[in-house]
Structure formats: structure tokens, C-alpha cells
Length: 483
Image 1 (tube, rainbow, N blue to C red):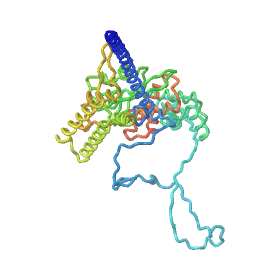
Image 2 (cartoon, helix red, strand yellow):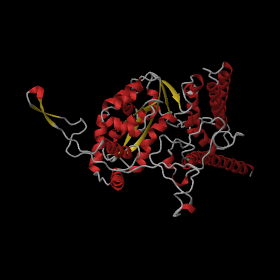
Image 3 (tube, one colour):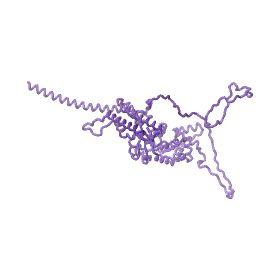
Image 4 (cartoon, helix red, strand yellow):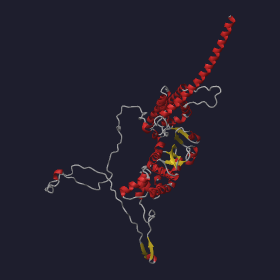
């Protein structure tokens, strides 16, 4: 009987052990599934919560769910509006009045004795600035003469170079049409409607299109001059944005600085498109850009990262994973570095002291270390193939660590800005044009727009308004911006 009990106990124990092994396998599989689902859930929530304030997504993608503005600036005791010492720009007269209208007292209107009353002078003056909409038709004639010096030879006058047809539109009207369509982002059809309604001149849509293409052709040499000037610059800002061109996605590439704007169009976004633009392969200075990988393939330039992009990514981590403490610490550090550098520039200093540089360096490394502790890389399980995914947060930490020198370059070289706003401002016109028109019908049209906006953007940076710049270009004087 005792032997039977021992045998029964042994069998039961073995069954229990086998059951435990089975359950252990099931638990391991469930744990793996839960971990996988948790990672996917986090990634999906991050994707769902992304907007223009916490990622690199453009504001146009926010739609009706546009988030409330969240300023990274800390509140101060100063009142809103212009501060003391700010130089205002009020509405002022730039010329003498062309017309004067006198207004007599209401009681005097129609009075028979108004002619014999004594005037006490002007009580008050007010000015009205208006425009006169007037269409002018100019007739050009060539005259013939019998030249006494040439034995009565008949000689004729010649038309100016810009008068090429029997009937044509003048430079002012053409410059207005071009300014509306390019700078104003008004469609060709609406440009036609505006000119017809205001001036009574129904310029056809085909003619306006030809004007745009003709202007772009006249700017070829000037835009090449701009390209060479950008290549020769010490520092440039780079960015790119997509647009629908000829029924497919193409990319506008921007290279610009405070003096020049250079835009090109390519079917490729990456290095192939950048090479085609012709700036980065020849550039040897400082390039300010986001952290997109193709930029790092240019080894002859010094890289400076846009910290505004990094701030948005850090905000995204805070919103999606509020338990993480290191992102706010990194935001505070970057803004502190920016503040200290701005005060140094304001005080006419050429660099930061060793104390600040050393302090920032140590704090940066400490935050990176803390970020790694809060986001450990999971161990690779036996039998698992392929590279282990780090996750977006850990990838951001490693990026901040790897490119630390480019992130902090603005503290060591005061030519380098904190952000890449210059490029984003210069390329914004492409985004607006895409939103208004939806697309470019042809690659030639996109190239023409890029040329014209390169020229106008450069002219504006030299203090020349768009209308004057276009008028100059129409008479082949576009190089005046370099004078």
C-alpha cells in the first residue's frame, strides 16, 4: 500500500511539474504578446497625438483639431505690447497733398452771407490717402526725316527695346499681374478676373501664363548669380518641402541666408535632389538643418541642428509619456543656453565664458544619462533575429548624444542661430502656393515659380519691394539687386 502511495505521489508531482512547465511557456508567450502590444499601443498613441507643436508635422496637417499655442517662453512681469524704447511705425505722409478740400461749418452751408463772414482760418487738418485707378493707352510712333547731312536720305526712328508688338501690355500692368500671381499667390484665373474688374483690361489666362514663363527666362542669369552667392556664404539654412507637380510628388529644396534665397525643384527629396540643387556638394561653410539623415552625408560642411525641431520632439515625449522627467530637463537646458547666449550677444560679447560652456556640457551629459536610465534597451531574447528596436524615445536620446556638438554649436559660434526659422520662412511661400493652387500642372511651371521666388526673396532681403523687383526684371535689370 505504501508503494502505491509513493507511486501515486511521484506521478502527481511529475504531472504538476509538467503543468508548471506548460504554464511557464504560456506565461512567457503572453508576456511577450503584452510587451509587443504595449509597444504598439504606445506608438499608435504617439502617432495619434502628433501635431505641429510636438513633432515635425506641418501646421497644415492639424486640420480642425489645431492645438492651442503653447509658448516655450517663460512669463515675465512686462506688460503685453511694445516695450519702452521700441521704435514704432505709425501711418505718416510721404508726399505733399495732391488735392485740398475745405469743409465749412454746417450752419454756413447755403447761407447767403457766407461770402462776407470773416474766416478764422483752418481749425484742423486730416489726410486721406487713396489711389486713382486709371488705364492709360500709350501710342508709340516712329518718325521719318530727310537727313540734310545724308543728301536727303530718309531715316526712321526706332521703337524702344521693350516695345515689340503692334499691341502689348505695359510693364506696370505686367508687373502687377506677375506680382498677384507669384507673390500674392492669386491663381491665373483670378488674376485675370481682378485685372478685368479693376482696370477693364481682360488679359487672357494664357497671356498671364506666358508672362510668368517669360519672366522666369529673364531671371536665369540672376538666379545663377544667387546660387554662387549662396555657395560662397559662411552659413546657410537648408530645408525641403513636397508639392504635387505634374500629377506626382516633387520636392522644393531651399538654401538661404539673411541675404539670399535659392529654391529648386527635384523629383527626389534626398541626396540626389540635394546634389541636383547644386549647393551642398560645393558648400564648405556651416549648414543649419533638421536631423534628416541625407544632410549628414556631406562631410565637407559643419553641421548645426535646429533646436526648435528638438524642442517639439521633446514636448511630444512629455505629452505621450508624462512619467519621463528628462525631456523637460533638456528643454529647460536648451532654453537656458539660448537665453545666456542672447544676453552675451546683446552685451557685444564674442563668445561664452568657460564657466557656462563647462556647466552646459556637464548638464547635457547628465540629462542624456538620465534619459538612458529611464529608457533602457531591452535585452535580446535567445533565438530572436534582427536588430532590436530601440523605440522613438531612446532613438531621440541617442541622436541628442551623437550630435551633441551640432546641437550646442550655437553656444560656441554666435553666427549659428538657435533654430532653422530662416529656411522655414523662405520655403513657406511654396507651402502657401500649394495650399492655394493645390498643385503645379507642369515641372516647367514649378521651375519658373522657384526661379521667380528665389529672385523676389533675395530682392526683399536687400530692401527692394516685390513690385519694383519685377519691373526691373521685365527690362532685364534684375542684377540691380547685387549693386
